Image (cartoon, rainbow, N blue to C red; front, side, top):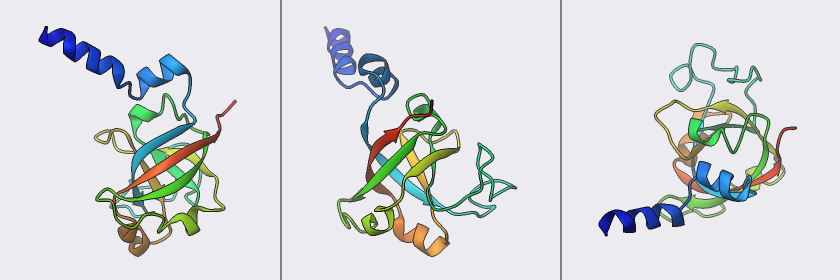
Length: 143
């Protein structure tokens, strides 16, 4: 009976590949987000070049590898700040994100799951961003 209950639980909480297979590609996701800058200690030896070959700039979004199936390179999204993972500071970055359509153009280190990483121009802003929850709304999937 215990194994059956576990199977039912897993079927009722699809994430993220199961969600993509069961209902198509999602339009809105709630994810944990962090921020990164073009620093060798945060990236690799080519800190201004993303995994797709694009130059880093405001509007570049990196996704964890498990999300690439439902948010492939080239996906355009909007972000809404839902506050820190501790429930504080909701909307603090909405003014910065308001007019930006982010493009999935980079990938995070393999150790991360179910996360996105927002490129920001300086370390102080990235540290202030910290770990947050964001609402990610897909504007367009790549053709």
